Image 1 (spheres, rainbow, N blue to C red):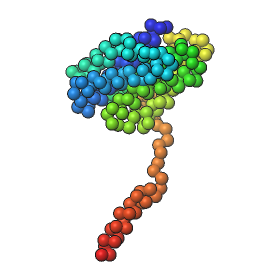
Image 2: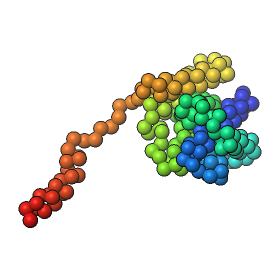
Image 3: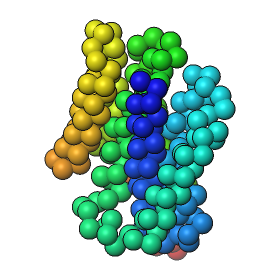
Image 4: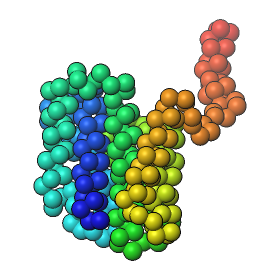
Length: 224
């Protein structure tokens, strides 16, 4: 199981690093900027998870393989972006894959460290959304998790599958694959069909109130 979690973590790191690097190339960052973004996107969620469960130093810092796969993803994206860009919305596809892998691996690691099922699922969700949030913040964008179609919810449902399977003592590998597939499938369907949670609306009259001082100034100028 420990080897399986490591593989999931490394694959998730690589995929999330691809999404970070692809976003950096689209924003025309230089090579160093793309590599920084690929490492941040690929490892922020895992580092946050490890710090919260007491697995210190975090695996991404003490294990050279996390840095290696992050830099590899950044280099591949920087020099061969034309091939990656042939995919439809590559940032969203890689982001969804990384979200799914990190959500289930984060949940499994939290359970291995003895967390109760509810907190393990929440920590799995946090692991999944951490990399995308860091990527968006570094690019001065509103994080995807705050505005996207079923982003955190998809991660939480994937993590819940792992928790339920663990409680029922089902095969860890099977429930992990099922949870990742559910999360990734929901994310892609939400992107395709535009599924989303209710969006906050601007209170009525706020625009009028904001423009009122300007209207008064204009009226005064016309009287003069």
